[in-house]
Length: 421
Ligand SMILES: [Zn+2]
Image 1 (spheres, rainbow, N blue to C red):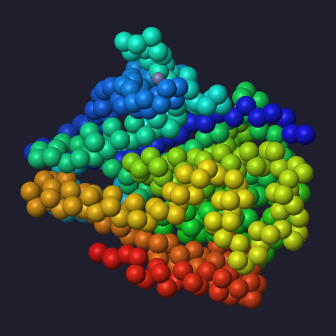
Image 2 (cartoon, rainbow, N blue to C red):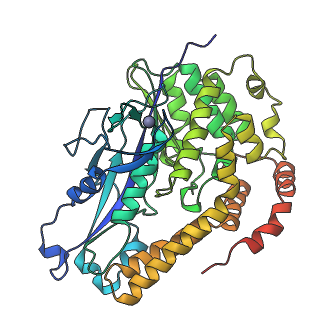
Image 3 (cartoon, rainbow, N blue to C red):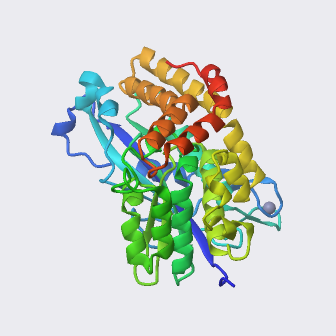
């Protein structure tokens, strides 16, 4: 029997902050990122549903006073010099780019524990002590950031946005001991075996361009999975996952026994339902990997596991992982929901642009990029191209054709689902 997991989770949201120096030129001003602006927004009272009584209540986010903190019970905000805007994002500002600084920003959540992530409590006038959950806090934080820092108004000096170069890290910890090697091995196995299906849950710019395995053109997926399965320890697993790590999909940082598993494929977004659905998928991957013995899932590790049937779909995978109903619902309806948010974003960006805001053209670019990268037809085409070119390891031709035939019926609906700008 597998030992009991003491699973805790934290999330790091990466955003980009565009800061205007107008009318001074950016290069003549010695600017630093205005983290105070972000901290101020997060220090305002937030609205959330109490996990005890289910009523809506106001709460104060536990936010560290410092820009950097090792206190895992608090959120914190810091600059991240490793994130740069894309060239298109900079270019969208045209001649006005000389008035801007761009800063990578990390907003790190506190670490949420197993007791359903309810450690913060606020008292109100009643005798009842309200509690918040991971879900409540993430939803409230993203909403606050979006409302306060992602809405442009005349004379906006700063704008927080999800750059195509930034993503969201979801970190998992197992108490103070780290994860057993067998668990990490199975997590790796699942991620590699199902990467094509996981890719279908993400935007095009979060799908790796390079093959996941260094010489994947010559490595059959089965051979790769077999190597992971027989890897004797963490160092060889890490070596096998180099491409997966470089693609920012999965990182198994197991230093000494105090390790974490980090998944980074989710695109940067203010949409909490996207983030929470993805966290659910990842949590289920870890639980499945850890407790897999003697279950249906263990059978998948055998040579003729059902996962390799050409008809095996992302829906089947989500069902087999036993994700929440709300997660399945999210992935089924995300096209529709995303359209209305993207429409709002685009309208706001146009309005800002027409008004002559300096940041308007950047907002317009970001809104249009959002339309392109989340377009379902494009996601399918990107995956299909990768699949045919050995991006997921080598498959034989008959298998590739069988997979494409199995997914063909959706090819008709995809044409009509989007109007591209
Ligand atoms: Zn309550």
